[in-house]
Image 1 (cartoon, rainbow, N blue to C red):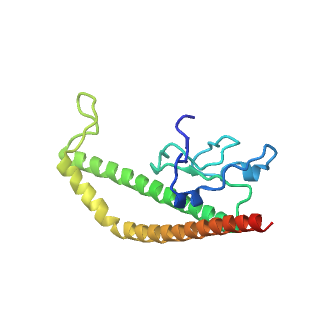
Image 2 (image 1 turned 45 degrees about the horizontal axis):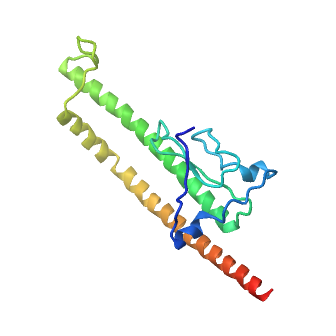
Image 3 (image 1 turned 90 degrees about the vertical axis):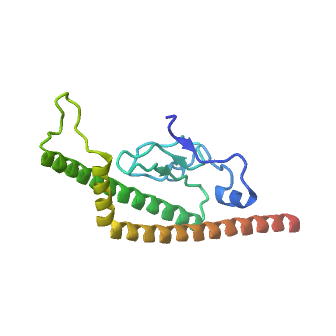
Length: 193
């Protein structure tokens, strides 16, 4: 599956390394609940068993968003688990919103085109067999109407999206500080021990 790729950057700045994990502590006998990526309702793809990174998949055919399979480390702390679950929940919420929105858009667009062609006395297919279309100006009417009709829905979506992303950012900072703190404690124990 060449379309799937691991999320990793060969050179991360020091602040970003705190977010990227503690290496790859996978063992061959590790249980399935820790080895596999978190389940996704969007795709059945499962990254390789020894992968220790998040994976991004091909775009979903309904939402047009790329699903992410989240890596679950064996020694995941409660804060890291909360962050991962929050990211998963946000991804699923986002996928669902855009799948529904795109379905509504396509349906209403098809109805609009069909009604305008009927009003002109034109069928869905031209005499040559090609699909009949509307001009850009005529389609602009649909786009304007669709955006106006869905303004409130998009406003609530944006508000919730910002709220979720601020929560994720907060937990990313918390996880980064915990990792730094744990690293400093381990160094302190080595120098004292």
